[in-house]
Amino acid sequence: MEKTLEIEVTEAVRPEVALSRADLGLMDAGRQFPHRVAFLCFAGDAAVAFACLLVAYLVRFDTPLSNLGVEAPGIVLSSYSNYIIFGTASLLLVLAQKQMYDGTWLLHKRAPLRDVMVASLVWGTGFLGFSLFFKFQPPLSRVYVTLATITAMSGLYTWRRLFYYFLRRESIAGKLRQRILVVGWTSYAQRLKEIIEKDPCHPYEMVACVPTPEGSFDREPPRGIQRIDSYRSIRRVLSALAVDIVLVADGNVRVEHWEALASLCEKELIQFKVVPSYFSILVSGLHLDTLSGIPILGLSRLPLDRTSNKLVKRLLDIAGATLGILLSAPLVAIFGALVYLESPGPILYRQRRIGRNGKVFQMLKIRSMRLDAEKDGKIGWSTKDDPRRLRIGAFMRKWNIDETPQFWNVLKGEMSLVGPRPERPELIKDFKHEIPHYHVRHTVKPGITGWAQVNGLRGDTDLTQRIAHDLYYVEHWNLLFDLQTLLLTLVKNKNAA
Image (cartoon, rainbow, N blue to C red):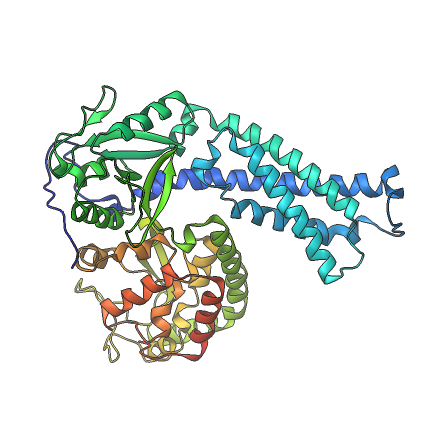
């Protein structure tokens, strides 16, 4: 049975804030900045990597080094262009796998040299091995790979150092820091505060502390950190202070209390961490991590928390959405005309839905119902024999044709090909309180199709089972899972409505 917190709304912190960030979609505004910075870093890495591989080619084949090793007559730039493109893409994938686009990583001063060297060496070894295994023509020069590894290592390190100095500006660094709310105040919390204060570009920021549920602090919090006097104010504090991480610093807090707090953080899409009272981890679902050298317990990472997995999924989405738009264009035109003939008016229907991290977006569909389908203001799911539906609408829904405009949502990055189906904001306000772990499905982008849908759980079906399938997908994501779901979508239409 899910544990609940006895949290009352007090006037202690910004009483005007009544709804959570998940309700309002406000978390997206604050959390999109690190993504933009990461994209800027990614774009810079791509340009530098491409330039380094090109320079390596020029040095290898357009200088006296061309006489080294096996002679390769007739080598021209066009014959190596595929190597340069593939090499750039694979190097970026290695960097992503090393978590080098994480906002907190970007603020670390000493990490770039070590990680860039390791990533470059791993890439160079893999690049050479891959090309030798597949016997590409022309053969890939080992001298070229060595030069490419050295130039990429030096070029990326130089670029990353320059980028780091750009991020050091307070106006930038302040938006990248993870904001921590501390529950209880112990020697661990004090040590973390001292570490943070020594580094002006530290990736974390302590914004406030609250007492434990028992209403006490292990030691008195120091000046300079906002103190909240009541633990019962914590829900309001999370919203008002835009908290990213809740850290339970007192490891002696009773398990049932921090389990309840973890549930609250999950609903608000906030990271939850615990400093354990001892280092034997016997708690299922938790893993040992560190926060600036402080051992902590955290909820296990989901597959799509990894940047490399996000990148792979995004590449699949772009390729699939582009192909989908091209193939579905005739269908949209034909069925759009049929809809207009049956019910004159707009062909496309735009509806507000909740996406990743609570962001509201406009989802596109071919209209399958009458224009006045919601004139009474009643919001709900379509049923099998819904009288509001157009005759052609039943056919479109059965074969998912009405969903084809959502390829555009996927291309824009608002949706994915596969993921939990997005719900309307009006419905979600009730779901998050009624269904345990509901908000976990909002840690990923919503999809055109999903694991629940291919198992017949769509429309007016059992909500609990549908969410259970969504959570299974989020927890067990991999590329083959996405491909399997896409294939099943083409052959299954159970409960399509």
